[in-house]
Length: 487
Image (cartoon, rainbow, N blue to C red):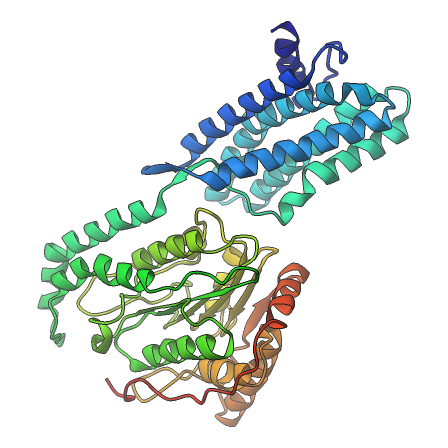
């Protein structure tokens, strides 16, 4: 027990950038196992603190912990080899893993809490600096460990620390990770759906029904109570993934039920991605439209959260790709309009969408298209190294083509019906669509161009290029409206 206690003590010392005091010859493999147990307990504690009820154990989170421990042991082996003392690998690994647990609990978690407070207080720059500090702290820990093993060789110890950091930390830029305890988003969304139904049955519904000019031929209360059944049936209808290759999963979201243009667009997108992009059986449509309330789940934030969480369970997080296509009106303060009168539905902000995408297990590879006015305002909340984000307009510009007389939006026609019928490359399709929209806006003499936006990375583009080479040849799919233009 003595060497194990010493390892934990030394792990804490290294966390605060101090030299270990123990004899590195004494600890063996059992000390590493003890550090692994400590790491597990810390992860369970932090997962519980940082998640909202209802909570659930996440198998992928335990796999994340074991993978991280393995990378830490590999980094320890490299440090021991460079110190020409391979016999102490288990001791170095045990101290490093104890330092991993201590760093997460005593350094990174407090810094993240402080960063969140600073961000909500309007100090975004200081918040970002704390986030970077929390990520780089592990490099400082590796430097402290390397200096202990190579005290008289400064240059070699710094190189060894950099190598150990690269082995133990950098892979997490590409490996999907999760906590062993997270919120059960499906259960939480079902509770939220029940609350929405209750609110519609009460004052919210009564107020909406009293508004002049609102006419509807469905029972709003019954419609909301039917949502779990409709969405469950749509999810159950999804086919199992095809093993041995990357699968594309698609969620198409039509937010505004007062104009058929948005439903036309998502119904066409569903057919297009199923036929030309080999996503048949992996497409889910959420639509707000009086004509589809008996066949399609509503496009609400709650249904979107449930759909994302359920599809994430079916996907291979390392291989499969999620394509999320959202179309509706957008506002200057970057809300995606969600409406089906007289239902009092929540609007979707960029932070809401980013939170909904934090599924369990996590979905790594994503293509997100937001087709709305001012949709460029969603980019900052959604961008990361494994996500391609496309928007129909700049954050301060409107887009065109919606309205009761339209069958499809300008960007929807340019991107879906024209560009994606000519290429299976999303970046190339964006370039073609952006040029087409610019031509149409010039022809109509619009005062300001919408200027569609894209943000990408080498990682996601490399993944998409590898995936699209596996697509079978297919014919273009001409656009045909699902419903007549005027509702």
